[in-house]
Image (cartoon, rainbow, N blue to C red; front, side, top):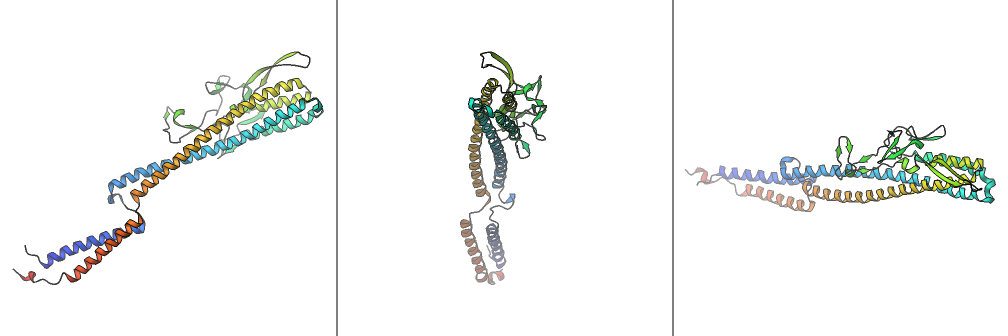
Length: 344
C-alpha cells in the first residue's frame, strides 16, 4: 500500500479536528459547569435528568404545601390558646365572684365578661393567607358573627347546629362552608367524583364549631333553697359567657355556678382541639424533614447527571490540551513533502 502525503495530511487533519473538538467541549463544560448542554449529548442521562427535575419540582411544591399548612395550624393554635386563656380566666373570676366576700363586685365581673366574650369572637375570626382559619372553606367573610344576641356561624345560628357522621347540620341542611380542606403532602392524593379521599391527603382544617362549641344541652342544678332546676343552655363559649354575664347582673349565683361548670366542658373540648392541632403540627414537622432529605438526594442525583466535577474536568481538560499541542507539533515536524508522492 502506498502512503502518500495527501493520505497522511488527511488523517492528520481528522485527528487535529477531533482533538480540537474534544478540547473545546471540555472548555465549554468548565465554563458552564454542565456535563450536557442538549439532549443529544447524552440521551440516557438527559432523560433521567428530566425525570429527576420533575420529581424535584413536585417535592418543592409539596414542601410549600406542608409549610403553609403548618403555618395555618400555628395561627389557629395561637388564637385558640388565647381563647383558652380567656375561658380559664372567666372560670377563675367566676369562682371569685361566687365567694361571699366578693359578691359586691359582681357588676365589675359582668362588664369584664362582656368584654371577654367579644375578644373570643375576634380570636375566632383569625386569618392567615387571606383565609379565615376557623371558617371552614369560607374565604370571603368572617365566619363568626353576632345577630340579635345569638352567635352565628357562616349565617347559621350556632345553637341550632348539630353534628352527624362528622358533618354539621341545621334543620337537616348541611351548614355552609363547614367542609374540611385537604392538601396534597405527597402521600398519593386521590380524588373520586370530585371528593378527596381523606386517607390520601392532609386535613388542614380547624373547625371553629368544634373549638367554640355548638348546639345546646340540658343542665340541672340546685338553688340555695334546695330546689332543683333544669334548663337548656348553649354549648358555645360566646353564648355561655353572655348567660353568665346576665346571671351576674341578676345576682343569680346558683345558675352562675352551674353555667361555670358547663363552661368547663366547652373548655375541655377546646383543649382537646388544641392538642389535636399539636399532633398534626408535629406530623407535618416530621414530614417536612423527610421532604428536605428527599430534596437533598434528588439534588445530588441531578448534580451527578447534569454537572461536572471541577477537579476531574480540569485534569481532563489539561490532558486534552496536551494532546492538542502534541498534534500541532506532529503537523509541523512529521508532514514534510514526501518522495512517495512522486513514485509511480
